[in-house]
Image (cartoon, rainbow, N blue to C red):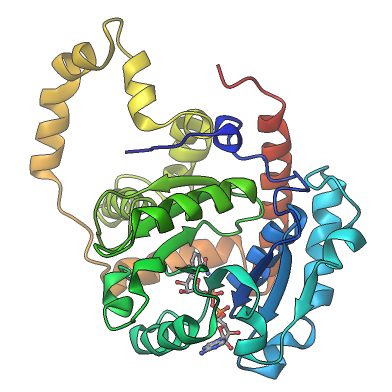
Length: 332
Ligand SMILES: NC(=O)c1ccc[n+]([C@@H]2O[C@H](COP(=O)([O-])OP(=O)(O)OC[C@H]3O[C@@H](n4cnc5c(N)ncnc54)[C@H](O)[C@@H]3O)[C@@H](O)[C@H]2O)c1
């Protein structure tokens, strides 16, 4: 159901382009992990960003942290302007009204709590310009669950990023039944101008597309681990040295289409029965604490908790190098 179109999408998202935003303002509400990352996305593509958080403490070192990320991106040529030029487009707004007053798009990134989002969307609708798109970064909540009561609910939708959105361009646009066609089209155009790769859900479902696919993969790898078929390191290897090599540039449908001489029908005839058998005998993982504790012991023996931050920075550098590589490759 990937409905990617447009120039940014054709390139797998070209997140470096300055000028996509043409100086328009995006309000980023909630300055935690995802809000700060969105600020980078919009600022580097030329939007002015007004960043707001209800906790002054969350805003304290915000610009300095964003500056550090921008320096990393510059190192991998993932921004076209200097970090200072991009950073200068981001400013802190002390009040919600001030943040959203001039916005063409409001990107909400507050805690994943239904009541908090319900209340905030009421306020955003009252404070933002009448034609602004109101988008939530929620990972799991359908837009209808927190916008039904909002007078301007036709301009509300989910725009779920993948962490961190300044490296991973996918954004899932998930409208509520009452989101207008115009809102969806404008959202799509704004995220493409921001260099992201939007995909559109045709109807609501908890977890949207990405988290549901991730959920299916996690359920199977945990079940294999729970039932003692391999240790965690080898199961991880199945992805990183196996399936995910292809998946970093083509999807599973494209993959199977090329894995039988006659394409997808041929593939289904050859292997469909076996896949059906696997599905019928699978015992889904129910997130039982014993299996989690066993995995934790295995992971912690390889990576002590105190090294997680360092390892995360390594992961981000690897991701930047991969994205820089992908950018130089032809799509077809
Ligand atoms: N962390 C991820 O990997 C990830 C990925 C995709 C989407 N998301 C979604 O993004 C959203 C934010 O997640 P996060 O990881 O950045 O959380 P976070 O805890 O890092 O940040 C949330 C911020 O929102 C602020 N906040 C809370 N209520 C507010 C309000 N009413 N007004 C203004 N600010 C408020 C908090 O002070 C905090 O700084 C969630 O909906 C989450 O599901 C997270």
